[in-house]
Image 1 (spheres, one colour):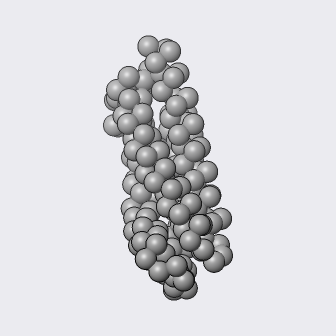
Image 2 (cartoon, helix red, strand yellow):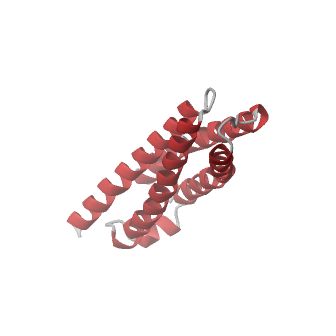
Length: 151
């Protein structure tokens, strides 16, 4: 059981750090003009965002049921639920950028001279900025929870 808990914790942390990197990459890529090559790269990065977020959920569920602390530690801990709420909010905030990235890619493929509308880009920047800010709360809640707060 100790090894299972350790492996799940390591994988969970690596995935969370990877998701942080992806949010950072998206933030950097949308800071300026978006030529077709950048749009393609952005869509690929965003695809990985979804895959990694899904893996975080799967591994996190594994930690709840197969980790050393037991499921009771999690379900009765309000810090855990705050962390889950923050993760869900980040996921919800990512929907609009994902839809826009797909749309922009399609438009760029259909029309080589396509320019991302400034208002849409500004909107996506706001969403990604909000994602990054809320994402910062996740390790705060996780650290507090790991030390017994919220139980």
